[in-house]
Image 1 (spheres, helix red, strand yellow):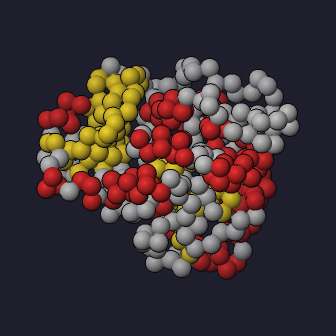
Image 2 (image 1 turned 90 degrees about the vertical axis):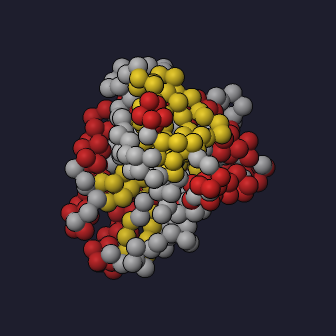
Length: 357
């Protein structure tokens, strides 16, 4: 635990620069969410997850419909607009959906031993991470490289800020989708405080997603992104490792914010500041969510490389990271490689120890 904390605390200064509020009253999370389009209530974990197999197609309230014959892990119970529902994960593809409970029960059956649920990618990944007490930081060596010499995942943290967002970064990703004639995969590490404070910008992200310009993996970056400074300068902070933090609510709170906007969160969580300890990792594992760090935090001088998880901040608080990334992808050799597919962005879910099928 001490080793994990030491590593995390060494990153705290950079994280504080990127995510610290500019004033005491900036974006204080009060739990209200007046802009939510859907009433999401009673969100709670199902521990351990319930395993089921779909017997016919299931229409989804949010997310993709579920085909027949899919192995599912049911990880949350909730109501949407007063209708009982379940949050389900496709155990092979990692796709997430919210479906009415009545439809799930009518069109699926409880998994049996012959279904070998424990051998599915998601179940095996959760077991691997629970045993390792570690977070993921690079694209799995078992993941397909999609024909590229330099596959990497781009993850964009959106923690609290009053500054203008980094639209130039998203414009670059949207432009790349036009060049490649397919959506650009990106991971958006969203916080509840940013989502509530920036509805127009969040709406623009959703437009790009619906227009098939961005293929967004919605990463959970916590509800309030607390700092919990250890000194007056706030050069050291505990973030979510502080004992006063309601960790489960930090995870579920962001899920509630996203679902209230019709957005389905993924199975990935990024700890603020990349700071975590064994206790928090164990709690996250019980929530059936995988922890994601990064090995190419651009503002810290860590370069893009094959199978890297790139970390930049799209909230306006870390412009040096955005400049560094855009300069790196504008270099003639990499720009040409991105156009040809020899360098390519891959979905962040490829970080899973057992990649999706």
